[in-house]
Image (cartoon, rainbow, N blue to C red; front, side, top):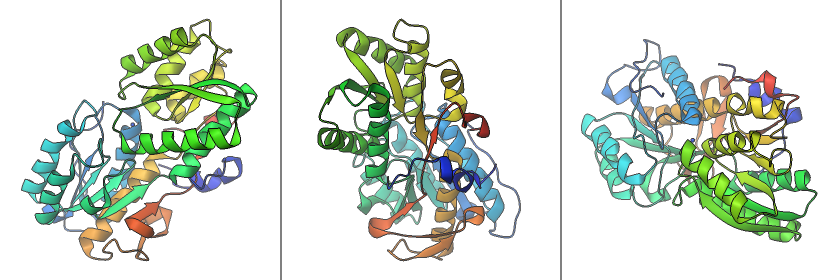
Length: 340
């Protein structure tokens, strides 16, 4: 894992102010922890089998091995809040040190997370947050405003700043997706008055559902000029549909994707550019934040600082938020430099 990728690609990044995984992986011995349940860091992504979360868990496991804890990943196959609750309850019963979760709903997980915290489990959200009262820290990939604006800027550049655009999101109750969509709509209305966001549809972070929703969008909106998909599952499914359709090269597609998923679609001209932070680094940072909480080095208060291994020092911001940094815009010219 190369943790200098974010820094090494800063010159090509678009500046931003702004989902078959492992079931359980044991960490090795090290100098940073005892390896008992108090040093167990449990990752709970939105769903298993999602390349984005495979990558974030790889980073999390690398971090946990580095500080000498025990790593495990658990989770549902479907990205719903109800499916995450049993895993939260189990983590509380086992008395793990910390639970690192990408939430499928901002409030529905609250009772379960409160019980886990009452049992002494530190709760760190990453990628998708819950209401702040239910967790100790939120490790954010970038600011919501920056993520939203970047995606609108990318599609606007590709369609000449005018025309109909649709959004293919993940689940209808996904915290991060909804925040980005609201901001995309506001930003487009302000900065690109000739762009009309005609519809938002939800693929539920399922490949086939997202593929079918793409087809339906193109049928419902024959004048559609662009699609924004702020989800790695959605953008890959949409690209797969477009790549063999009459719309290839006619309908622009951008959003948030991983290089390994999207490389072929950049190379064949289906997609021109998309953005993402490094999900391995996001998982790595979340694991170190959890470790700092478990060790008592931080409490999650604004101004707390902690060391995140190869990523360096981070500071907790307002509302218990830690921001990873600036994502990268991927094009055919630089996608070969990345492997995640």
